[in-house]
Image 1 (cartoon, one colour):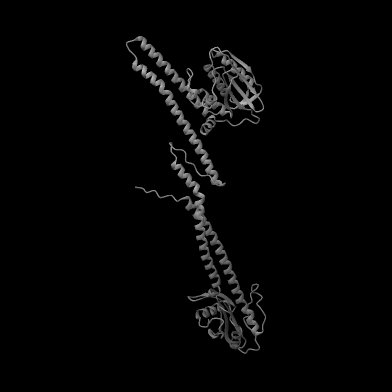
Image 2 (image 1 turned 180 degrees about the vertical axis):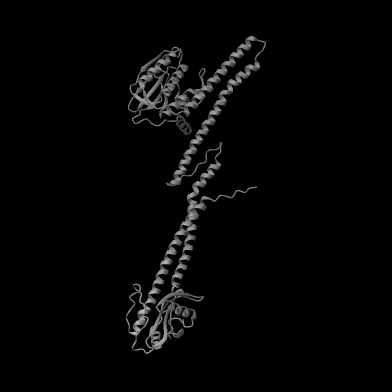
Length: 505
């Protein structure tokens, strides 16, 4: 059995990244500060050691320096002619007694490899018994040809930075060496202490950053957790959960966007559910009728068989028309309209020609608009003819029906005026819904989707379909369209507009 490791949460990753950056930054700052301070201390130590050369010459009354030395370095001459001192021993005794070591410093005078004199003050430390240091300096002086040497000597107790100055006199066979050393560990103790303090402070700061960052990251990610919880709670039967949108930051914008998406999804699901319910209801009646007649049919009676056959075919034709209308409505709602400039006069004339084929009524074009609108000519023609067909079904036979178009600064109107029973104001908001009819009445051969198709086409053009009373009785259906005053817009999906309208209702 393979165990899938638990993923690391975004909160932990964000906090880890913050702590990593903070840790690297503090480490760089601490390291740079330590190295700079350490280098400053080492430079001061070397300057103090180099100053011993000049101070030793002052003791002897000399002031010469080796011209071949590097700039800033003062090297003792290989032989020193000192009138007031009679021997190397006397000179080194005076030098040790006069050059008092400072804190963390030590000095010793070595004659013929043996430590002879050391300061008697309590300000420094004793290096006269450090045979390793003494032996090393004597060997280095010998290797350098009797020149001043500098170096670092380390043991378990100390790390010494030293300078060894050879001393010789004419007429004295003794080899003297003046050694001055500084304890680097002691000199670097303030730097080490400061670094330790910095490390402790950095750890405290990292802990504070971790605590604050944990709560801040949790606060910033709480909308995402709410989004996850809402997504888990959403089902096809319940699309109502929403996220609380607070603030004005990117997360709040994401929350509002997700809520808007959920609104559209809920509207779409509700529309689909309503469509399925309506289709089931509409198909149930013809199926029941056909089944009932088939069950009651007398197979031995030719007349009854023919009547049942006619009834079944009629109901099947009605179901076919219903399915065709549903397919047409789905096509209109999901289609991307091909927007072009449409000549209103030509469109009106074309509709006037086509409606003449609808029997039972005299058709009259009473108004023709001039100018262009932006729209899909085929869809507008389809919607206008659907209104005409709907008017012919509800208008008494022989009654006239007028069509026309108009245009003003705000938009264009395509209308059909009948002289039928009219539509009461209380029912006008229902007639554009699928399978919904005023007062529940059905027209002969109607599916209840015609006006829904017209409304979808109007909404796809950013317009609307309205119904008003006809003077003298009847209803006037008008498709109101905006006039384009700018460049052609991108293709519009009628279904998006319809879903928004039905979701709002």
